[in-house]
Image (tube, rainbow, N blue to C red; front, side, top):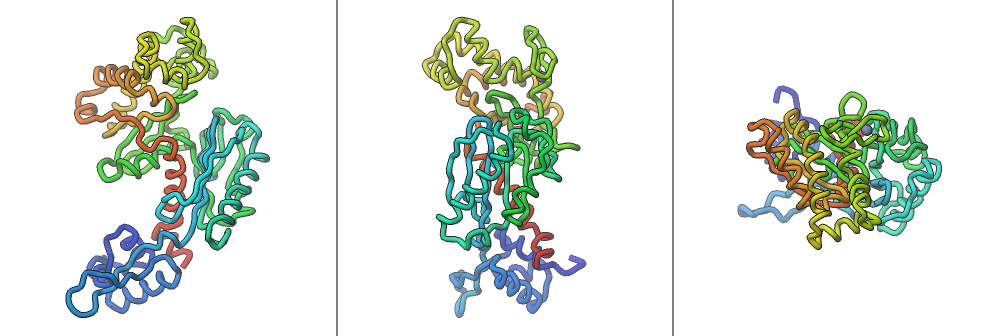
Length: 387
Ligand SMILES: [Zn+2]
């Protein structure tokens, strides 16, 4: 290193487990012993790290091990969905401390929903043995809308028309004066799934959520790809061939959203005279091996596969993860997707491509929200700026 490592950079070594003793840090950074001691003392004093004397003994007093203080703060998060909202407090490692599911109708709008979220976080903070709002280091929110990430502004809300153009962070920061980060729900789920399940193996992942609507989150080179205005991954309105001329709510014909989403699967089964009320009914029929239902889901998978094959050619992910309610029908869905992706994507892009079912399930949004915040507030820059 040509310049001296900062306290923030030393913190990153400890947080990632690469610098566990003062001597390790000295070796990795080239800092002198007094310089290491000064930075470590600052981090200890700020409560960002703790000292643990239980190091491997080499005779005499063992060198103190330095550990990241995951319990040194709390991140309130919420993953808002059209049908269910999950609210939680996470520690600084992104682990869920306490979680609650809330019946919220997001259509009630931000004036109703945001105070309700903040009241719930306050209640959870009261019930937890913490320094109340003083322990909060940042807040993360996933919403079912396109989000201009830098501003935290919701654009073209998919389900929540009353949220369009709303800048969320200042509203929350009035009660919780900390960094408030807002992103699209599928993006936070993709981040959560990648970090918790695949980060050690892969840097490139495509997460496709198939529920009442279809959306995708792209992890490229280890980070989320948001695009110029936050609309990257909005694959729902890419049209498919031979969709049958279904009019999409966007005004175009045969968008994948209108021919392969959960809504489309329900519509097709009803048109065949099947009495299905919800996706849960469809899941039950798939589990029972009902041939007609399997065929409809597989056809939806083929149409989804058309759009995914284009994305695979463009992005060359290591793994495509299918999540959302329809992932409960994984077998017929994935066989339709595979059939088309392996036929239509380039050989190189599919050589080692895996197509898998979401493993985190509903909890991925919560984890992703926490990681989004922690990456910001615990970055080396942030630590040095707030020091
Ligand atoms: Zn459309």
